[in-house]
Amino acid sequence: MRYTPHYPRTVAEVLDDDMKFNPDVLRAVKAYRAAKPWRGSEDEKRAKLRVFHRALCRIYGRSTALVLVGEAALACAGIFEPALDRITLGKVSVVTYLHEFGHVLGKDERETCRWSINLFRRIFPRSYANCDHAGYMLVKGLPRLPAPDQTIRATTVARPALPAHTHH
Ligand SMILES: [Zn+2]
Image (cartoon, rainbow, N blue to C red):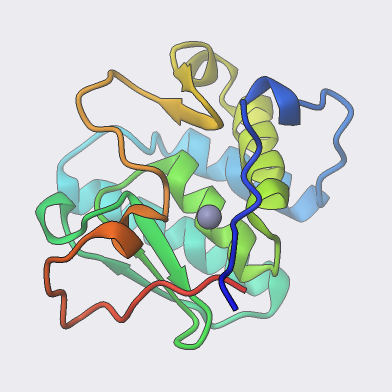
């Protein structure tokens, strides 16, 4: 049966000022913010994201792998592969990472958009304000605009390291 992702149409549709978050998660995201996710070399940014990822995994008792492959290696911003329990990101992107981690927690497209966008907005209000909205996506600048994790389905380029993306 074909899976039809249930993406929200717009970012506005999922905004919720009263959304409740796990306090441990809020603490972890604030610690990540304090570490300045976007500052430093690519390696430094990756190391910070890995620390944040380990914190979220600890909170939820997960051992999800996080693979950072570089933008050129991935046709989309990021994917989560449930069968492999693995997140793969093309570059360090806080929004994309949170989106994929929402899938780790079993959220569908709509729910993970809602969770990740509101969480990002709560902790990074200025960065959020600087993002443009493209449909349900937050976009910084506009040159690269893949859907967070569906483009890989459309690509015909062989990507041996990445089995077809499957959502649950
Ligand atoms: Zn998704």
